[in-house]
Image (cartoon, rainbow, N blue to C red; front, side, top):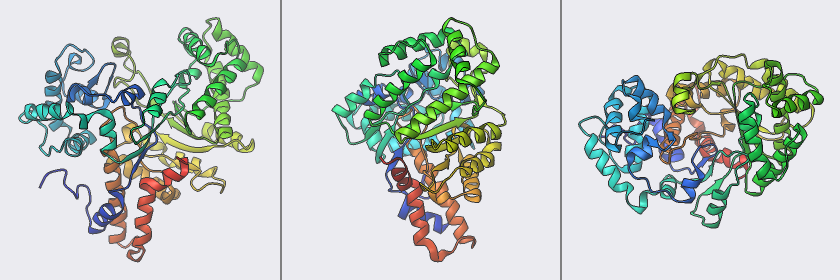
Length: 471
């Protein structure tokens, strides 16, 4: 029997029944990912498994890069770009056996099995044959980008897009549909990033050109963003996403925000107090915009980024040098959502935390502001980034179950740049079914309610997201 077999991760008969009869064949809604729209539109054909898995221009799998560095692999095999595809793949094959009990061990073998039909364990002894078999398949039409997405019964993909993006690739996909709905998602982080005035002013020029508005004030910024927000909505966008260290909810006056903005326009860096006030105003105004458009909003809280300054200078951002932050999120988060509630401007909201200590804090924060208008209006989102693994998923499910309604959970997403990350949905579904299966078999849930439990599993896998986002 192969390692990734039909009952992988399913430890009870009930878990197996729930997975095979209810979860396994449900479609996928990937409502948050980082796939590159151009690669989807152009139906990318990957040169080899190394490009698909490890290194693709500026992009790569920073999960794998971190593991390879920890295993003694030098940067020339990763971001250096000086080694051949085979040499880099060989280093990954040498690393894989050392990733046991890291999710990469499971993900790697699930992707080999589910994508390529290869059930061998990847190690130095099998590296060459796996490399060549994957590359031969990637050279065929059945393994181009769009076909890889369709292979996993994906119905909707939401990419992550900047307000200044012209969405040309999304337009191309609309003009040449391939059976999967690809929708932009609004990610305005750069429009809030006033801490570096030089970089920010260059960005404002891009945003101004995209919106047709000369941005000389904070009022102009909001007008430009509203115009782009409307354009994104016309392209099918239904949700936003914010990557933040923390929530921001400092008191401020409108005149203060205009003065802070003017200072940044002339190249003066904001103080810590000014930065906090500006972020508070910006985040509130964005949340109002989302509510008025009927969108859902997502907040990813708790990353501390680019911590290895030497490597940041050498290879840039998003290369594996980010980590879990350790901040107090409760007070600022409650003030932020309380103001929106008082104003009647609270959109459907999904909260994600990167620090596991914040699971219960964030869960209770979300449920403090549910108002009975929409099932699961305020959500505690799936395990994210460093918590996107078995223990992290189980802890997220436990917090959601103990302090709220897991039955209303909108389920899994890939949060990935890879076309072959969809087995992560399978991974999540197997863990979900294992959780419910164990509870039934040990008497914590009634076996007589298996029909309802099966429906609940289907809802968490697919139906809840479909209804919540109204795709």
